[in-house]
Length: 329
Ligand SMILES: NC(=O)C1=CN([C@@H]2O[C@H](COP(=O)(O)OP(=O)(O)OC[C@H]3O[C@@H](n4cnc5c(N)ncnc54)[C@H](O)[C@@H]3O)[C@@H](O)[C@H]2O)[C@H](O)CC1
Ligand SMILES: [K+]
Image 1 (spheres, rainbow, N blue to C red):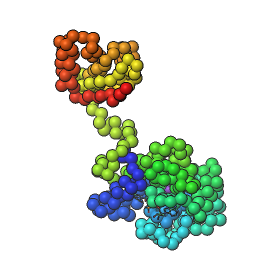
Image 2: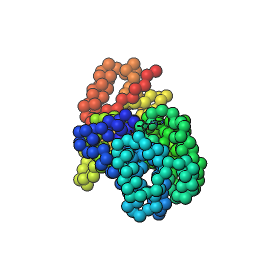
Image 3: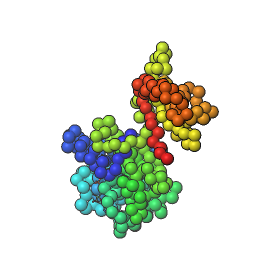
């Protein structure tokens, strides 16, 4: 799964809109549909808290989707003025289908108490400064009055920086965060994981493989492993599954060589050879790992040393992958 900063998420968004010609309103609709599919079906009574940007726009679109499923929905808007283009489109539809809406803070408290679930789209990847004023107040009210209620965050809990997961003054404490396209860099900040709740990533109709050029960081998932895992033929031989040569380990520091060798065996490499200067590791190494000892050049004859080098060269030529330990005294 791709890991995205605010910037890379925007680049992907722009590429999808400008190059793939997927209208941004379609992405927003896909995001809303994907989001609603992750909401507990038992929940019936919702309050959606919307900001003025596209994160808020997702909120209005989610409100419509829930409305079409016959759920009870109300919307609290930070403001109904100066909405982003796609946010305005979804706001207008919500108005036309007569979803109850308010921007009155006193109503916010009452409506939270009347709801089972609060979905918040105050800020997403567009947050770029400390949360202050009315925004701060709204976030605090949502956190304070939502005891025993489910809080779902759209894309990222509002107030969390998408880039480093730090709290920008204050932030929503979510039970579930349903995020789009990339695993946000913010989620790697484990210090603040209690604010993210359960994290779910949805593709919103895009295929991550298409955007690899924008991103060079990955979050390893079971699906990634499934994609590279090959079914093995019953007639196959261990030589069919790759030969790994690991050069690592010393008398004092054997840990990395043990871990690397055993990991290769467990990961399914056909042949694993550990080239090490000291044969002291046998007890810790899985029996499938082959050990190749290099003798100290000072303790053997010149011709034996030549043979040693030949042995190493043969192993290098015979390997598909070579891992070299980079430790210096
Ligand atoms: N491909 C995708 O991932 C898609 C994402 N979508 C959603 O869009 C948001 C990002 O929307 P954006 O309009 O860029 O920003 P926000 O809604 O997060 O923010 C709105 C607005 O707020 C202003 N702002 C920033 N910081 C502050 C602050 N501290 N106080 C007050 N105002 C602030 C800033 O000007 C922003 O413009 C993404 O998270 C997704 O939820 C699309 O819907 C689908 C495609
Ligand atoms: K949010």
